[in-house]
Length: 114
Image (cartoon, rainbow, N blue to C red; front, side):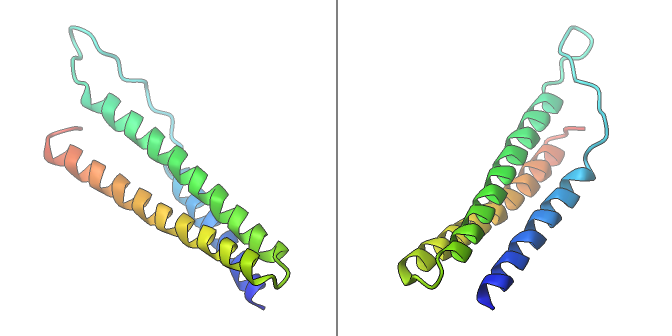
């Protein structure tokens, strides 16, 4: 029963992340630097969003790995505990990544990025 709950939670977290990222799937022009457009803030924001997106995808992969480890553990307490730690660490990572994304966007808005 617990393994079904863990798998369901893993799938739900993955779907939430995928649905959240698809909202940002609009095509945007690549910012350029030059004499007319010397603003570096869009580049910083774009790089930061990409890096946090990659980190979020890796955290989801580890969440899935933890769920698979938990299902495969088949009642072995050591393996189950290792899988639980992997799941917990992945969830903490997702929370930290989401908070970082929020914090970076707030700071960029405060300093006047568009």
